[in-house]
Image (cartoon, rainbow, N blue to C red; front, side, top):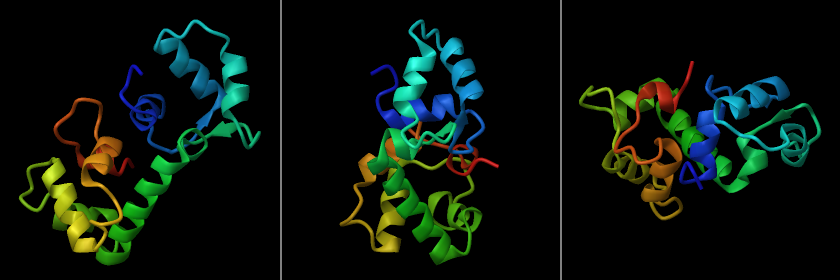
Amino acid sequence: NKFGSVSAGWRVLDEEGLNRLTFNEFCNACRKLGYSGNIKQLWTELDHACNGTITLAELDGEAASTVKQYKTALADRFGDLLRAWCSVLDPQGSGKAEEKEVAQSLTVLGLEDQISSKKLFKLLASPGATCFTLLEFDPP
């Protein structure tokens, strides 16, 4: 696929990082990406809940669940995602996190046997990227 994973493609569609898209947002994103198929039909196939929005959970439930489990564990351990970012993902203050920091954070959380750091990194970073930023990790 063009983006390497459903999760990576989702991040391209969900520019605002709200974890949901309305039909209008979806149409605009499809047009911007050059999609020439039947957008309304595609929307109907993707909106499993028939509630007028789509989420990553509807497109890739496993990916959404993995990211949610990780972020919940970070927030539980550090109080919020910003503190978690500063404590384990970017402790040197470089403004970015790499796969090694993701692996270390999983160890700190005791999740290293439940979540693959390589897989999680691919869910959090853009396709082909060697790092991700706080803005990508926790959009406002």
